[in-house]
Structures are given as structure tokens and as C-alpha cells.
Amino acid sequence: MSAAELRRGEQSALHCSGTRTLQVSPPGGGPDIAFRFGAVLDGARTQEDVFRACGVRRLGELALRGFSCTVFTFGQTGSGKTYTLTGPPPQGEGVPVPPSLAGIMQRTFAWLLDRVQHLGAAVTLRASYLEIYNEQVRDLLSVGSPRPLPVRWNKTRGFYVEQLRVVEIGGLEALMQLLQMGLSRRRSSAHTLNQASSRSHALLTLYISRTRPQLQQVPPADLAAPPAGGKLCFVDLAGSEKVAATGSRGELMLEANSINRSLLALGHCLSLLLDPQRKQSHIPFRDSKLTKLLADSLGGRGVTLMVACVSPSAQCLPETLSTLRYASRAQRVTTRPQAPKSPVAKQPPGLETEMLQLQEENRRLWFQLDQVDPKAPGLHGARGSWAQRNLYGMLQEFMLENERLRKDMSQLQRSRDMAWAEQQVLAQQVQELERRLLAASRVHPVPAASPPCPCVMLPAVPCHALQSFCSCPCCHLCPLCRAPLAHWACPQREGHLPQMLGPKAPGDIPLSARPPPWAPPYSPGSAKCLRERSRGSWTQTTMLAEMLIGEEVVPSAPPLPVEPPNTPPVLRGGTGVANLAQRLEALRHQIGNSLRRGQSRLLPSEGPQSLDQVLPPR
Ligand SMILES: Nc1ncnc2c1ncn2[C@@H]1O[C@H](COP(=O)(O)OP(=O)(O)OP(=O)(O)O)[C@@H](O)[C@H]1O
Image 1 (cartoon, rainbow, N blue to C red):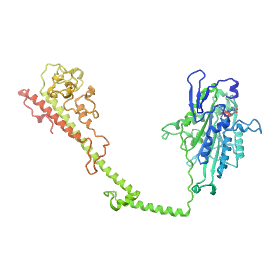
Image 2: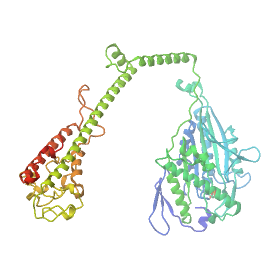
Image 3: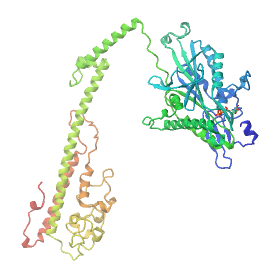
Image 4: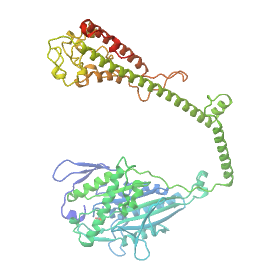
């Protein structure tokens, strides 16, 4: 808690549970909310603890190896961002800040220079320092008063600030002076929550160029290593603030709005970066100068450390929760860290000749590959041994295999199409048979004292509840009893249809539950159980079509034949055509029987009808 918060006697709403979990307890009761981060550091931690726990040294190592790394602090105004990065401001002109209070930046500088010395590598350090104030980029190291600088973009550099001064650093002392100079030029103002509130986002970037190490200190393999160019950027964001809480007016309010807007843009980019479909989605980095300059750190090739600063005071709980959620989101963003590509080193003259020879050999091999006839029946003899000996031979074999598989596939497709066409013809014949069957049965009606069918005014057997089926067209009526063929579940149908269903059914299945004689046998994988079908789906035509065609549908990707490649491919659905023909024959037989029975009751005046007049041609 800040001194002011302690003075006001505010309660704490946060406590650390372990080294990685932060527990938020709302003051009015309610369930605790836990947040888990890489590290959680409470108010008792020293600046040194923060430096050691936050992982900035790992970033320094990466920067030395050529990666682009960023550390940024984020949080509500007055929560300690600047303090965490750079320590407290000097208490007066010429009054040094005690070393124990130095922030992450000073400690990292010292550590980095020490590391460079320890490595014995020749490293060039350069630095730039800028601030984004009211959406304008200003150079904090400029000679003379800072003026707004443009942010540009190109393919190799991404977003960058044009004409930004980059200063070469001789040592730690120079680096510390440069930091102090930037801090003193940075815009800050006093408001209710912070006497020295930063009104701009500040970015200090260290450019680390590693020249080739000394010959005697490295193994020969490293000699060709080009100078690596890493980057370590420290970003002290201005704090988000509620204008009502800070009491900002006039210029302060303008600054606050600008700060909040750019932080909002940053939050928006973070949310979109978390989107699993992010490859397709556009990340609006161009929405603010801040997001432009952080684009590479957030979503690109950078490695980024975010330090979220919060006040434990219960009064700040809404802002604290907002910061913690922001940080939770940020820690789920993944980047694709990538060291900058090394420029191609100049080859020694001997290597150049070898490279030319290899290129020539490559050309010759490609020429040989082109000469091989892809239609040749396999690779045998001298060519076969050649193929076994080198990669191009294998490639050729794959091509031939591919060609053969393609032929097999088109043959399978042709057989499938033929089977399909045959099924269509058979299905049409079945429909025609049904139609004629109905026509024949109308000619020879079964005399019965039954109530007339409400839709066709034909007599029907009393056991059939025709009222409930009258929506079906008349062509769906049973040719013998006039009941809709859909009515297979009729409990008394045995009395009317013994001649169609034959003697007792196997397995003691009641006749009423049995399917029609031309129905295919039920198989669990192929079609729905007959009894499961809804009444509406039991129209004769659709039922037949489904049973005869639906079951025979050929899979769209038939499995490749397991037989040797010379045998003609077998189509899975091919046997279905034979089944269809058998069923069609059975149907013809049934119709013939029923017609013969009808003829035996025929009136002399109507004259006999031959079977061929009723049945479709075979
Ligand atoms: N860990 C800490 N220990 C002691 N004092 C601290 C700590 N963190 C912050 N402070 C003090 O709190 C005050 C506000 O801190 P600081 O200026 O770093 O906040 P800030 O988040 O950068 O605010 P703003 O966004 O307004 O710039 C300062 O006086 C600072 O010295």
C-alpha cells in the first residue's frame, strides 16, 4: 500500500497464496478469486527480489543471442510501474537514489554489462529512448527540444520510428546517465493518486550487436557466425486512470483520455491475439502508436515479460481486477520467438567451386529423372538398381505407383457409376410394378362390407383404421385389403394377408409385426429397423426406394482392393445389384400370384388379362 493508502487506513483485498497465486477477497464478502501468474510478489519483496523473480535475466540472455525482447509494466495509475522499472525519483537535485531502490532497468543494465564482460565477446551496445505523449512519438535523447517523429513500417523492420536518435553506449555509467536524462525529460504531472504521475508511455531500447568472438576463445564452428543483433526494450506504460478518481481537468484530462485510448487499443490487440483463429483475423496494431511499436513484442517474433502492478487496497479493487484480467489474458498470448536472420557470409573460394560442382550434378540428376518414361512397367534391371541406389529412383517409383493407383481409382469409380445406374433402372421397374399391381387390384376388388375409404371411396377391411391413414394417396393402398400398405402394425392383418405373407413366420414373430415379403432383411448397420420407422415414412414408394436403393448406397470413397493389382477391382455395392434383381423377381412373382387369384374371381364380361399386360417388361 502507498503511504496515502496506509494513512487512510484502507483494507487490503489481496494476499499471495504461494509464489504464483494471487488471491483476491472482495471486502463485502463473496467468493475469493484466484489468479495464477509466472510469479507473484507482495509488498514485502525488495527491488532485488523483483529483479531476481521476474525473469528479466532470461530475457537478457536471449537478447544477447539475437532475440528481440521486451519488458513492460502495466497497471493503474500510482500502482508502482515506474518504481518497479526505475526505482523512486531522486529526492532532489544531485541526491542519488540509494542503490537498494534501483529498479529492474538499472539492475538489468549492470547485469548485462557484467555478462558481456564475462563472455569475453565483443558486444556493441546502443540505446534509444522515446515517449508516446498524446499519441505523438518524442525522442527523449534528441539534441534540442524533442519534436514529434513519424512511425513507419517496412517489411524487414516492421514498425519503427523514423529519425530516432540511437546512442552508442560506452559503459554502465553512460547507460545510467542516459536513463536519467530520459526520465527527467519525460512528461509527468501530479494528480490525486500520484504526485509524480507519468503522462506518457516510455520505451527505452537497448540494441545489442555481437561482433565475431576472438579466434582463440571459440570453437571453429562458430567462426562463421555473423554478428547477432538482439534487442531489449523496457516499456513503462502510463497508468490507466478514472478521470473522476484522479480529479484530472484540462490538459491532464486530455492526457488521461489519450492514455486510456491507447491502453484500450493494446487490450483489444491482446484479446485478438488470443483468438485461436488469429491467423485469419486482423490484429489492429495500427490503432495506436503504442500498439504499432509493441506489435513485434506482442504477436510477432519477440519474447515479452509483462509486470502487472496493483494496489492491495480494497478501494482500488475494480481497477485491480481489471489489471489482473488484462495480465491473465496477456500471459496466454504466444509469440514465435525468432532470432534475426544472419546475412549470408562470404564463402571461401574453394567452397565456391564445390558449390558449382554440386549445382551441376543436381542439374544432371534432374535431367536423368526427366528421361525416365513414367509409363514404363516398373523399374527393373539396370534402371531398377539405379533406382534403388538413389533418391531419384525412389521418386520415380512413387510416381509410377501413384499413376497405377489413379487408374485403379477411376476404374472403381466407373464400376460404381454403372452399379448406380443399374439400381436406378431396377428401382423404376419396382415402382412401375407397384403401379400396375394397384391397377390390377382395382379391377378385381375384394368384396367386403367395409366402411369406404374417405379419400378414395373404396371399400376397406374393417380392421384397418383408415381414418388415420386417409392422408395417403390411393396408390398406397394394399391391393388386397385396401388398407394402406403403411399399416404393417395392424393387429388383425393376419386375417387379410396370409396369402401375401405365407405361412408362420420364423422366430414366432407375429404376422402383424413382419415386414412385407420384398423388404430386405434387417441388418443393424444398414437400415433402420422396420418397426422403428415412423408411420409417415411407411409410404410404399419411399419404403421400397429406401429399402432397395438406400441400403445399397455405395460409399463415396471405396476402399482400395486388397487383391493383386491385376485383378479387376471389386465394388462393394456391386452385389447389391444382384440382390435387387432377385427382389424384383420375387415381387413379380407375388404380383403374378395375386393376379391369378383375382382372375379366378373375374366376371366373364371383364375378360381375362394376361400377366404381360399388367407387369412391366423384364
Ligand atoms: N514497491 C514500492 N515500494 C515503495 N514505494 C512504492 C512502491 N511502488 C510504488 N511506490 C511509490 O508509489 C508512488 C507511485 O508509484 P509510481 O509512480 O511508480 O506509480 P505508477 O504506476 O508509475 O504511476 P503512473 O501511472 O501515474 O505513472 C511513488 O511515490 C512510488 O515511490
